[in-house]
Length: 406
Image 1 (cartoon, helix red, strand yellow):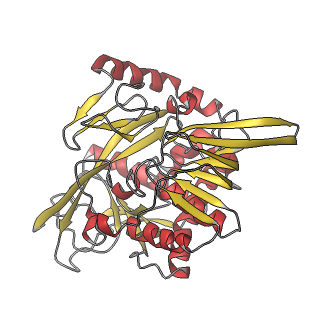
Image 2 (cartoon, helix red, strand yellow):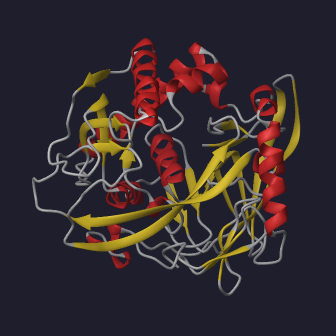
């Protein structure tokens, strides 16, 4: 299975599923330095960083590599964050907001560095990002949007980002019905062909003696065993698979979008789908850029060639969970940025508790598992798991298939 939905994303046009590397299923017990669970963007990127630093790495995937949400992205790499830098600063403080901004700048530049080092032709390019108001000039909504954009520009500059509010700015090629003529311009954003990039990383990793990958190898449990008190003693990590094999390692990374059966993390996130289309326009008619608003992007399009969706896991406090798993010392969820992404954080999550309770009450009123007619899947908005029409897990936080926990 190469995709987690019924629809095909635009990326398969230049990299069909048949060109994605195949790996064998694990058929024995193993021992390694680090075991990574999940062969998507986080897992493959983490494997690259560890392998190039001399670590022995085993990467396992429950289906095929790149078969989850990674291949269903929009391909944006941005430091212009959805939740807005003023809102992040309000929730976490200016110091944390600056660290968050720096981490995103580092990440988008890192993709460019690696693609250049490995000669990966993944269409990576840096370009500007534009934030426009979605409302016509002269309306109350437009004035409110502009106030927000000016505040976004001010805070972005405080955090060290290249941003500028430009009154009267117009996007080349825009001829939509809304007069969008004011914008915040973010320099140094980027875009790329996600699966081309990751296939390039996999081709490099396949040549390294300290790397191995196993697909159709589903993780069922990650357990730490041993004695470790005040950093004395020793613990090993045991990754157990559905077929009964065990991978013994010093450290493990759960790069599975949703940590396996980690209810404390699952309960702190909101799960929803984001829907994308890819349309053809005359070459050069629209500026090559990242363009953000909720209005119609292009007035003219000769055809809509691809329609697809991807899953979004939104933490209640809008910051990702990256670091040591709660209650464990050797199990990581994929850094001067440790404090802001630490999965153990509690205070900022508690501030969002009323919103979380309201969200859960709405879900319980609707029922837990819903049929997604676009992707032909059963989706659970409570814990984020998704299942095929036959009940096979496509995205999961539970251990089994449909009916095994949600």
